[in-house]
Image 1: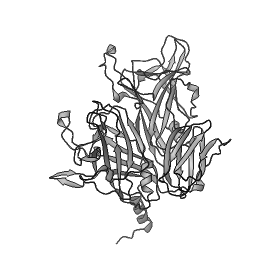
Image 2 (image 1 turned 45 degrees about the vertical axis):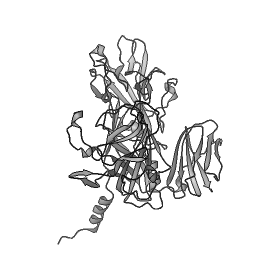
Image 3 (image 1 turned 90 degrees about the vertical axis):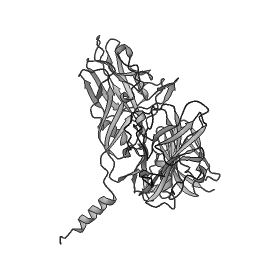
Image 4 (image 1 turned 90 degrees about the horizontal axis):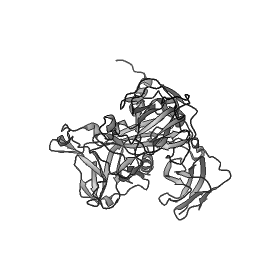
Amino acid sequence: MKRILLSTVFSVLAWMIYPVIAQQTLTLKIIETGKDGETSISFDDGEYENDSIDKLNDDDLDMGWEGEDLNIMTTFTRFQNVTIPKGSVINSAKLKIYAHEDESAEARVTISAEDNDNSPLFTETEALNDRSKTSSSVRWIISENWTMWQPYESPDLASVIQEVIDRDGWKSGNALTLFLTGEDQGASLLDNARDFESFENIEDPDDGGDGLHHPERIPTLVIEFTPPSEFKELVLKIIETGKDGETSISFDDGEYENDSIDKLNDDDLDMGWEGEDLNIMTTFTRFQNVTIPKSAQIDSAVLVIYAHEDESAEARVTITAEAVDNSPLFKETEALTDRTMTSNSVRWIISENWTMWQQYHSPNIASVIQQVINRPGWESGNALTLFLKGEDQGASLLDNARDFESFENIEDPDDGGDGLHHPERIPTLKIYYSEKTTAVSDIKIAVDQPVTLNFFPNPVENGRLNLSHKSKEIRKADFYNINGQLVKQFEINSQSALLEVTDLQNGIYMVRVTLEDGVVSKKLIINK
């Protein structure tokens, strides 16, 4: 009989329990930020002409040098919900774009990122020098001929992205902006500014195009990264809970129509608002065997889903979780009010066009998952349910309920599908977490001098905390308990806010307040 070294056995067991996180790929697209009439637009891409914003809503973006008018063009692309944990190693990052014209004149471009923890939305009144850039940059000399509507990609931008991810205030789920800045190439009749497709791109019929918008040509950033070694990844899918004849079904996903369960066995799930029938749709997804220990810190969590239809009407959804230690199986006779939801929630405004059978993911819902994991009765291996609840958007003929693939999904032949079930499209929850807890004493405190952050009452006796700053915008407030666990989060983005903390137990907390240019930490006592 062969002898096996105990160290080898322990190594294998450790790998089985805590698998090493392999390189991850994050694909980000420019998304809709508003409407121009019925047309979707985005202020997350645009161009500066010298120091001033030229356009925030156009079908193409110019980068480089306009030799006739002596204009340096700087394009920006802002990507939201960058779910990369702090401490990750960026292995590669490339911007993928599509040419808007046939072009050959050499363009000399320098790519940098905004030197900011969480890049804010752009406005038409700001100047280029209102934004700071990273010290890291990558030069892109574009000499090859470009062909209209063909794809091209930037050089590797890993060093640029890494500098942002390494910032002290970086947090998974923040926004990141790239700048593509031209340079003075001298007066000439040449146009050394290369044009590429924007979010609002349209194939111009005058150029032989079809006159249509092409979502596949929206600027895209593809990042490959390795999370820090202390992080673990948990990937959960909706699983089978029974059979309908020979067909596998699951009661772990379904939808409520107002307060009553509509269906527990269907090939799609509706979330949002049905304006014609005045129905608020609430989708639920229950995930079993959530093997996250009670001490864990959730860095990021996203729900990955696939569209069931081509849809464009805006859906307004609030994501919560069931506020129980171990979420029970659903049954068709229960009401939505039979379940209690977490006080932590994340709003998801879905304005971008959805394309049937394409993948989409929620915003970062770490704070929602964290509240469940922090429950006194939580145990690794319990079940957890997410609720995606629509809101009343008024009577209309629009269907503001976005439909996505369920466990039982089938590609409908009437829609050109193959008539088959696609298990890869089953709703999936991806969670990055660490078992390292943060002591309150380890939370970095930045001194606010002079002290202009109003923080009262302290102690809190009525369940409400007032925050205001004399001159700076407050971005967010994170509440840590005495064990260093993140227990509540608020996104604020204003100079004042009234925070409801009635759900927090009496005790001592550290509140980490992120300002537009720094962080202030304050001790808080709750004594209701």
